[in-house]
Length: 291
View 1 (cartoon, rainbow, N blue to C red):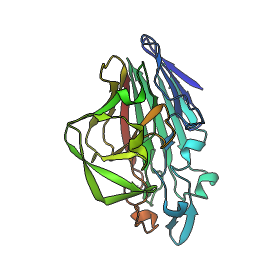
View 2 (cartoon, one colour):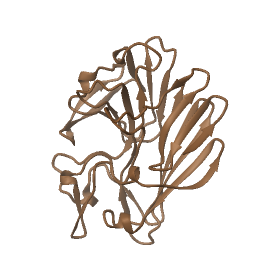
View 3 (cartoon, rainbow, N blue to C red):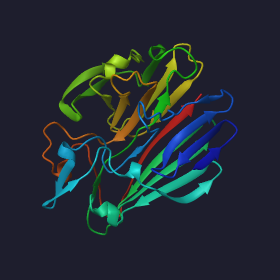
């Protein structure tokens, strides 16, 4: 377990999956990251790579071969290497291996970087394609979950507000699969009141189109909460497990999305995939302010 600390925060990150497991605000005396109770959901804030969401049949096709991969990919279940570490900074790295080639036949390096600054934690994703010829196809995303209620009240006392305040496209899910051809409007002029019954059809997904977007999670009293700024993501997922009355909400920046309802299985044609040319590096960033 890696610990980062400054005058405001103590943050703990597990080397397994490079997963954030704790963000403790010293002054507020509050734990913001979901405790990971397996009765509801046993994770805290997994990193999703090289897919986000689920594949049709948990499989895809590439160069005449069929490969099998579970929901959200394999990075969350692997040990990362610690390549750089200071009191308020750590860089984790995962590279291709014999194990990954069996299910994902690409050379890659996936780095997850955490930086503390005041009450903010910055998370940077770097995906590098070391291949000298082939392009790299991938998705990546965050899945941080936050304790609710945080500082009193009940789950439904909390809301999520979005800036810029505008009408976003909301992508619907059919089972675990996306349906991008039939979006519905999501009016961010009105804060989203959090209600457990709104997640019976899985996550609420907003299309961000890589525009810098800020999400405020708090009660109306607004004494304590979490503010997430997503710099360049394609989508944002809002999720709590249906029918469990789980005491947390996940706010998830995604650079990619689950297979569409009509996906062909061809990985090079996968909706929402990023394509990285040989030798290039991708950057995705977001931050969380724990106030």
